[in-house]
Length: 597
Ligand SMILES: [Zn+2]
Image (cartoon, rainbow, N blue to C red; front, side, top):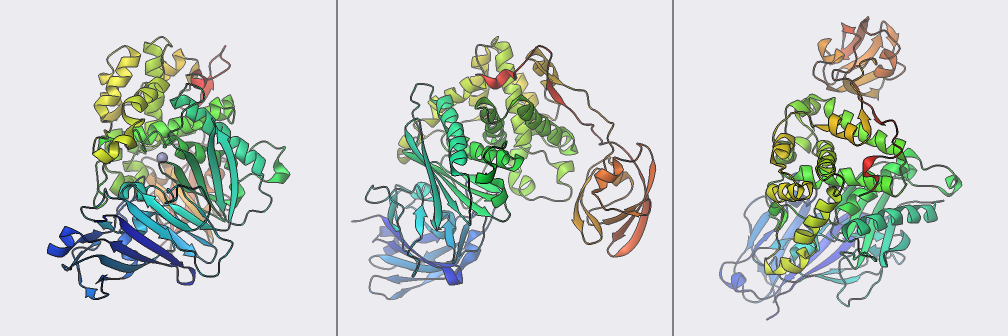
């Protein structure tokens, strides 16, 4: 009796609709109680309930004779079929017009989807093979397909056709992009890597982009598998890049990543002799970040991520490790490969440090809480976010830095965080997908991380982690950095700041978020106020730029609109409430301590 599920997906670009036909073979449950079908509510790597099922336009089912089978809604995202003999076919349409990397998109230029947006799960059958046929839309003869989802025939191609995943989790972890694509390819430690770019891309500097991404990949492969040539955890790797006028984002998958960037981020042929632009460095950092996730979160996983429950919120309290350590290494790998020099790398660390300590959220939320509440706080930004939330990316990266320093100092330079990553890789990551089908895959707990750090540091690290993860105390960075040749300055309070973020609008600057104890808050400015003038002069530049030219302590008269009514207030020109910190190499040091393992 065949048990495989089969999805046939047909894009209808004009309507931004994917038509899906799901064939479920004869199943004991379908004859007795009926089958329960459900669409995920969230996607791995993005921790927010997104109600993907709201994009299902219509849904119906039939038996193998073509007779209609009733589908009873059980919730906003699940249905139960009436009992029927034989196979069941479910036909539905999904609207797809979201350019983010998290869902699905389709128009006359191409398309993209994650299975979590398109493929219903059949309760009880998550571990059977899931076949998917992607049909070419009518009339688009030059469209190609980019995905790492395995093909039924085992061949390597860029054509539409038949794919198969061993289970639903695998299906959900290989998104598919199609359209007119620009391809780059290179080998890293002998393994094929492809970059598939969608979007209008004249004059792209293909050699530079290939060479730079290749350096990142080779360094990361060698970090986790130092024996040469490094053993890759995949047969091939794919960067899917959606290049648009605006936008930014990335989502990690086990053998690929889906990226969104701006046209201006990518290197152009005419600039091939010039230094890499800041925007391009940020793009390379995004590639580095998502690629690092191949190991850290796609194979070394939190214990609560091993067998996902896509129907509801799950425990994400270890995100400080899985996003923070990944953020620490994305820049560090760029530094180790020479894509960032000492000055650029220290500036990145300095920006990360300031981003954390300048907001009151760091005094309110612990790193553990930041991950736990990701679903409702970090992912659901409010005007009060900087005062209430600390980012598990940035704080996590600082914790990773502190861990690296802790291990290096206590082991007298014999070991580093690299050794912890390889240790976790060996015990939890390398065989993860080999063990997954038997239900034997294991995930990491906080205790596993603490034990590994203690092992390589040669000392008990529990107090270090209790403070770093479960308190809002400042991380012990200044002294530890100083011992290894990096100076963290005392906070500077010499530059005036409004203490609020704002955006340019017609006639002025609209306040978005107001920091606690800032000049803006003390003057009574609030989110949505539109600042018009300081001392009766129109704000032709950003408020911070104007205030920087005025003495600290000066009383500035500010006029602003609140709900279209003119208001005024007196603003005491003040520095940022928590000061600004700087990082530099200490005298006698020419490179940052973590340049080498
Ligand atoms: Zn990440």
